[in-house]
Image 1 (cartoon, one colour):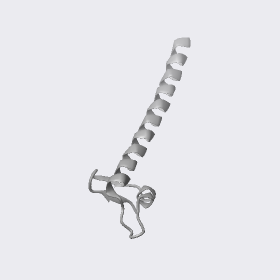
Image 2: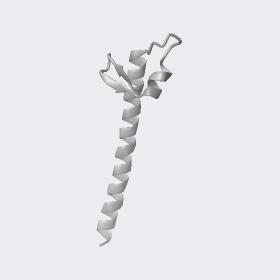
Image 3: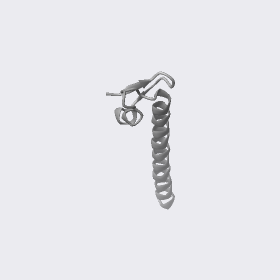
Length: 65
Protein backbone atom coordinates (compact mmCIF):
# COMPACT_ATOMS: atom_id res chain seq x y z
CA UNK A 1 0.00 0.00 0.00
CA UNK A 2 1.33 3.43 -0.89
CA UNK A 3 1.98 6.27 1.53
CA UNK A 4 0.80 9.86 1.01
CA UNK A 5 3.42 12.51 1.72
CA UNK A 6 1.74 15.44 3.43
CA UNK A 7 4.73 17.70 2.81
CA UNK A 8 5.03 17.07 -0.94
CA UNK A 9 1.37 16.14 -1.51
CA UNK A 10 2.25 13.03 -3.54
CA UNK A 11 1.76 9.30 -3.28
CA UNK A 12 4.93 7.47 -2.32
CA UNK A 13 5.48 3.87 -3.39
CA UNK A 14 5.26 1.35 -0.58
CA UNK A 15 8.84 0.14 -1.05
CA UNK A 16 10.16 3.70 -0.77
CA UNK A 17 8.04 4.46 2.30
CA UNK A 18 9.30 1.23 3.88
CA UNK A 19 12.91 2.43 3.47
CA UNK A 20 12.11 5.53 5.51
CA UNK A 21 10.04 3.86 8.23
CA UNK A 22 11.48 3.67 11.74
CA UNK A 23 11.03 0.89 14.31
CA UNK A 24 7.86 2.56 15.60
CA UNK A 25 6.26 2.36 12.16
CA UNK A 26 6.56 6.11 11.54
CA UNK A 27 7.49 7.25 8.04
CA UNK A 28 9.88 10.16 7.58
CA UNK A 29 7.47 12.12 5.41
CA UNK A 30 9.94 14.55 3.89
CA UNK A 31 12.58 11.95 3.05
CA UNK A 32 10.09 9.50 1.57
CA UNK A 33 8.46 12.21 -0.53
CA UNK A 34 11.78 13.57 -1.70
CA UNK A 35 13.00 10.12 -2.69
CA UNK A 36 9.78 9.47 -4.63
CA UNK A 37 10.27 12.73 -6.53
CA UNK A 38 13.86 11.83 -7.35
CA UNK A 39 12.83 8.39 -8.62
CA UNK A 40 10.13 9.93 -10.80
CA UNK A 41 12.56 12.48 -12.21
CA UNK A 42 15.10 9.77 -13.02
CA UNK A 43 12.46 7.70 -14.80
CA UNK A 44 11.29 10.73 -16.76
CA UNK A 45 14.86 11.59 -17.77
CA UNK A 46 15.45 7.99 -18.86
CA UNK A 47 12.22 7.97 -20.87
CA UNK A 48 13.14 11.26 -22.54
CA UNK A 49 16.59 9.95 -23.48
CA UNK A 50 14.99 6.83 -24.95
CA UNK A 51 12.52 8.96 -26.91
CA UNK A 52 15.31 11.19 -28.20
CA UNK A 53 17.28 8.16 -29.41
CA UNK A 54 14.23 6.79 -31.25
CA UNK A 55 13.59 10.17 -32.88
CA UNK A 56 17.19 10.41 -34.05
CA UNK A 57 16.98 6.90 -35.49
CA UNK A 58 13.72 7.71 -37.29
CA UNK A 59 15.12 10.98 -38.66
CA UNK A 60 18.22 9.20 -39.91
CA UNK A 61 16.01 6.66 -41.65
CA UNK A 62 13.97 9.40 -43.30
CA UNK A 63 17.10 11.11 -44.64
CA UNK A 64 18.19 7.93 -46.43
CA UNK A 65 15.00 7.65 -48.43
